[in-house]
Amino acid sequence: ETKPETKGRAARSAAATGVLEGLRSRVLPRRVRRAPRAFGWALPTAVLCTYGFFANLRPSEPFVTPYLLGPDKNLTETQVFNEIFPVWTYSYLVLLFPVFLATDFLRYKPVILLQGLSLILTWFMLLYAEGLLAVQFLEFFYGLVTATEIAYYSYIYSVVDLSLYQKVTSYCRTAALVGYTVGSISGQILVSVARWSLFSLNVVSLTSVSVAFAVAWFLPMPQKSLFFHHHHLTTQVSKEIKALNCRNGTVTQDDPAIKRVPGWEDIESKVPLSIEERPAEQQEQKVDIGKVIKELWQDFLQCYSSRPLLCWSVWWALSTCGYFQVINYTQGLWEKVLPFQSSEIYNGGVEAASTLLGAVAVFVVGHIKTSWATWGEIALAMFSLFIAAAVYVMDTVRNIWVCYAAYVAFRIVYMLLITIATFQIATNLSVERYALVFGVNTFIALALQTLLTLIVVDSKGLGLDIFTQFMIYAGYFAATSMVFLISGTCSIIRSYWKKKRRRNETIVNSA
Image (cartoon, rainbow, N blue to C red):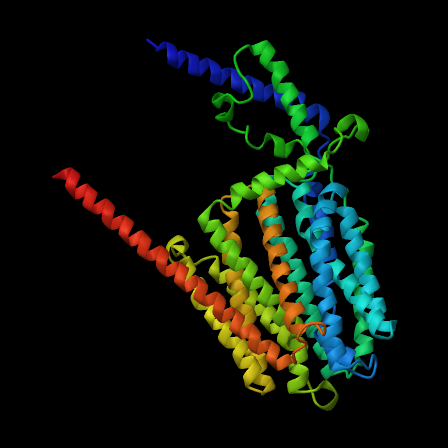
């Protein structure tokens, strides 16, 4: 004989299944116009990858510093390093948070178009702008380009199913990586073999980013976003549940029975695909920015209350700050070691090699099995010390080939570690919190970089020469290494004593 509580659970589960089927029949078939399977996710992914490829196909980028210091612009080292490059850091920091909110509110595509337009303005001004102030405005637009990258990397999540996130993310990042690599290699070949001028390389870059801007217009306009444009869909599902609840009389939205029904958890992710929209004023409630920011703040507090996530996020922010500084001023260091006007340089080849080898390292680390929870902080300390050594070698050994090799090692190790950090942070986060945490980490990194730039680089601060700057960056990574070495050692000791105490308690209890 079946027990009463078992009968109750079975009835509730059957009712839950009925609710779910009702939702599928009432919400999905009636309101969703699904595109053919071949184009449901492939078309927007292909268009976005094409945009990412051409937007990063910029053969002149590895040669920007020699171009600014050369006869085309005729700027001084002090102007370039201490007055122009810091503008990028400041503008990136100022624009990041408003662009983050605007990206979600405007639903990605307009911000991608803004990025494409900013790329065109940047390279047009790089060709024709004259004087210090004009080139500083150029750096502002480039700061807008980097701030709007969030739209490129998050757009695809609003138009595909949750089950495809990993696949489409890899496609989009690979497209950007391939574009940057092809651009660097082609730039090196055009300079070293074809003997093109740096001005001509910038013409090619302008053409490429113009193609990217044209391609961006073909992106489908998303109907949802992570924060501002998902409440009306949730409300619609909730209304359907309440209506069916009245008929079934047994199940509520929060009932555990309905959450055990297969397909319940991803029903919301399936609703927004290619929705046949009613007018926006009928479909959505009025956007409450204050409420969105409050929700973000609550999520922020909850996420960073986790010590492992906090640890990896601190390393992310500290190392990204130093990484930005090194890659921003590396061309300046190379130019001091071996000037472009008097000798052959291989900046493009080195950038391409470091990117490809970094991609290989990222692929390999995905197959390494280790206990990052136990040894993660020690690993961060050791690798950070290696990065510090690479930057120190770049600064002290005034040989261009040694500088190139140290730079390649520096980028490989950073890309490897940032991949591990990304995986560790994202493992237990929802998509919304993934975007929030990475956005906050990047913002903190930029705030630290702004402080470092203001003190060390800016002519209004110390305005140090390039070699002294790199010595400070090496010390910065060494200090980061010591912080995580001390923290990791304390964590291991604490873990050891906890295990020992549990073992002693087990012995006492068994006795």
